[in-house]
Image (cartoon, rainbow, N blue to C red; front, side, top):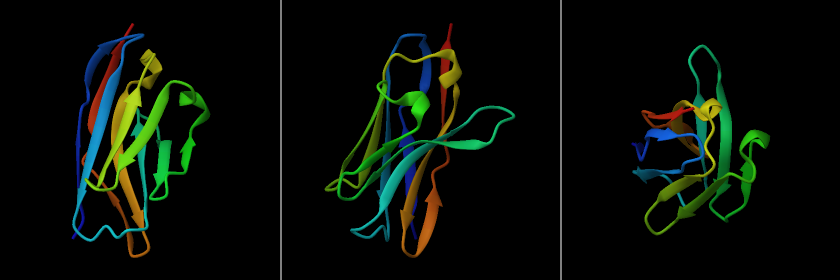
Length: 115
């Protein structure tokens, strides 16, 4: 059984920073992709960033240059450093784990950016 536990969301003013963390436990394997997605009210869930177990990254155009995804394989944890936050970054952020035997989601953490 896989469990993803997110932390680090909150309320921040525009231009501020937040760091999200997601700790994975269970059968996560050594080869996987971890990532962050977000969903704003009334909108679909969209990709923010992903990182492979080998360290290759991928970002949505809207966050390039502002957000940085990283991971600590020894701790089975993925991070999302979010800088220069904008009100349009407001959403529930979900951690995702993709392995050969399944795709898993965390419970989500709210990020609210005030103008």
